[in-house]
Length: 279
Image (cartoon, rainbow, N blue to C red):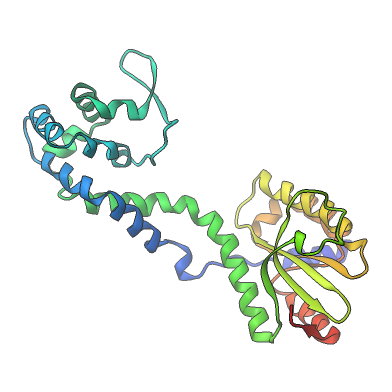
């Protein structure tokens, strides 16, 4: 087992990132479009020497335009976001957006006033588009998992393997060992011998999440595998596992069917021998 696991560990890939992994422009465009009217109105402040006067004029015209000031400092809309005001008091960030006096304070204290006066920004729509691109990097971790699911789907498709995605355990009432909790599996594949319930993930970096996942699947697998007609399969990959290899090794010893992208063909060979059925 240690030798098999070390081989498995050595096979973990360096990346599963395709070019569309890095930035989700569709989501970014949607986020910007949702506030573009307000941003265009805020463009009125650019180049104004007397910002307080310009803010008052704009506020009199439409006070709601200032509700998007948080994104100008790369903070997503969050009703619970807090900050210290100039009196040392903890206040809700959005509380600055509903009076001219506090809006002026916000723009001055954040440094936006100099940016506006000096015309370092010429168009707030373009500026926020750039901010959204930067903030989108935080979503890459989730896209790594999505990419893994896509990669596995593609491999199954190319091999002619029939499968169903996002399958709830409630579809299989005979599996009572999972209790009342609803568990949704990434894939389910049915053969003449059994039904395989499959989870997939990919980790570029470390963190406590990996230990939690390994522990959770070590718990789920025996509960499913106790039924002759069902088997839990875990397809995982990524260099992040090197930081949690002890927990991964423990899971590897508990879960009979653990594959990475390199060894996935072995699972496919097994499926073909058992004759895959339509789900």
